[in-house]
Amino acid sequence: MGPTRPVLAILSLVLVAGALLLQFFTILTGGVNSAPLNKFYFLESTTNNVPGAPNPARWTFFAVCGAENDLNANCGSPKPANPFDPPRNFGTEDGIPQQFIGKKEFYLLSRFMFAFYLIALFFGAIALITGLLALVSRLGGYISSMTTFVALFFQALAAALMTVWVVKGRDAFRSAGQDAHIGRYLMGFAWGSVAAYFLATVFFCLGGKLGGDRSSGVRRTRSTKSNRSRGSFIDTERKQREYSP
Image (cartoon, rainbow, N blue to C red; front, side):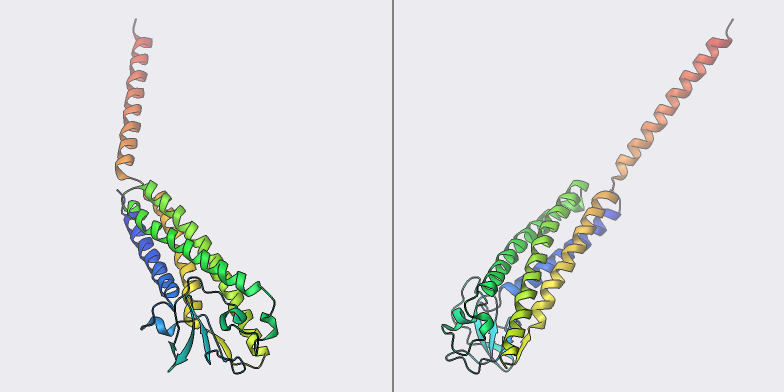
């Protein structure tokens, strides 16, 4: 076994594990409200004119939380794939920016984002398992490259959708005179996972392509030498027949 494949496979496994960790940090926000997860959120905005809403409000994966000492607080009961839809989140349209009222754009963007996140997480876990095969076989490298690419595809979709609704949501709140800003940690985690999956896909594929078995090379060399020797023997015998009386 050549030395190239194990090195590339180990590097790829580290990248996939790192991407999975960043995804877990994102998916658990609002459901687990302890350090360091209580620092992470998608979007924060003041809600001065919204009755009954936390002020400021933070949107996480599982809940809309308040903030105390710059940490998530009072998140309430976790709701799977909690959408970004302020009228639905707060149960009122009073004080809600007009960009959110009567529209399903933000609801659909955030719900699809949640679905793609879970699909990417699933294939990332599969890639971590198949990546062990990449340590010992070229086929394992190609299989792992394929599963990691699927995780990359859905994670890229999730990150793109998240970026759209977070940026547009921030701008909508700011246009209504609220102080809103993007959660830099979860934004970084989303695109960091995309980068990690991309590099892992490339390295797994290179491991399958460049990490050929040394034993196969030895067999090919021996076969070539054998064919050459056989050809030389035949040529010698043919010449002897030509010169014999």
